[in-house]
Amino acid sequence: MSELREVISSGNDLAAIAAVDAGCMFFGGYPITPSSEVMHTISDLLPKAGGASVQMEDEIAGVAAAIGASMSGVRSLTATSGPGISLKAENLGLAQMAEVPLVVINVMRGGPSTGLPTRVAQGDVAQAKNPSHGDYKSITLCAGNLAECYTETVRAFNLADRFMQPVFVLLDETIGHMHAKAMIPTPEAVKADIKLRKTFDGAPEEYKPYGVAQDEPAVLNPMFKGYRYHYTGLHHDADGFPTEEIETCRKLIDRLFNKVDAHKEEIELNEEYMLDDAEILLIGYGSASLAIKEAVDTLRAEGIKVGMFRPITLWPSPEERLYELGQKFDKVLSIELNQGQYLEEIQRCMGRRDIAKLTKTNGRPFSPADIIEKVKEL
Image (cartoon, rainbow, N blue to C red; front, side, top):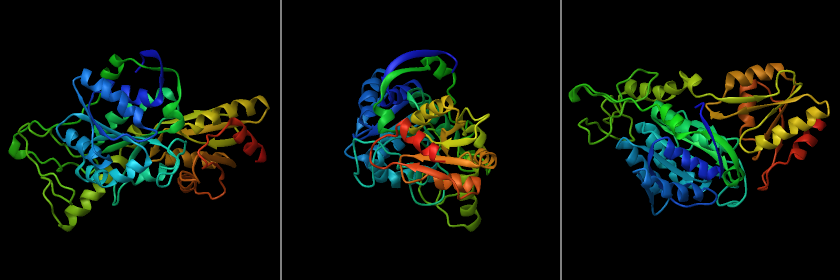
């Protein structure tokens, strides 16, 4: 994606534009603040591109329709905010078990329940790790600026097809509604980088969609193309038929983990800002990182050596890099628009309980001054 174009847009609109540029052909969803603009924009763009956008009767039907479209072989998207993810949870678990690729954009707002619909939060980070019950390995990306609302949505479609499962893209109210200039790849550059899902082209009687290596995803040919398989949320065998056979069930769940864990290098993406000579480490993500970066610049001008680590892929977490940073820095500050949902992961990865934190849950974003004041306390 070396070719760039300049646009003036909002984060939500850029996510919708990215989906269409990435080859998305179906959107199923329901309006909810602060994500509604994703649906509004893509409903204008998709018909012109030969696709379809459907406003369903509720969030549950929206994700169900998107999963069904994906089963037909097209790239599919749903978008919502926290309460909508809660409603979609059962079907997201179905997509994890049946290994149906899907991109889910969650524009986070204050919670729990209906919370603060028009205010910012990062309270869905833990939910994105396990949005449905059971054992599986989530993939969650988190945009930290306007350009990433575009690039991370594109990346999500490629990862969904590569790993055959739902992939989350977290925005939040601040970044979703922010309207400014961004440099994003051209549609031609995006198309050149598209990685399509694998298909089986042998004899139909030899097709076993779930009969794959223990570190690889299922190979699901598009429905209505001559290849038959059973589609279920139950534990299943190589053909997709339900089973309770002990080893088959164990290997299935192990594979849902292994297919991600064995290929983390394809998924992990981070930003490191002024870390080389830093003495204090700040960790944050999403829109909060914009205030963190400005605070780093201000503190540096005052002679205080701080640096930022920003995970762009939140799940699976960059645990090896976090461990390394935990060994390097004595003073670490975690900054989140929640009560510390990712802090628990940072503590686990670093093997430390002495991580300082700065949190905010009143629906207002961080200012650089908030962060500067906290760093000076350290």
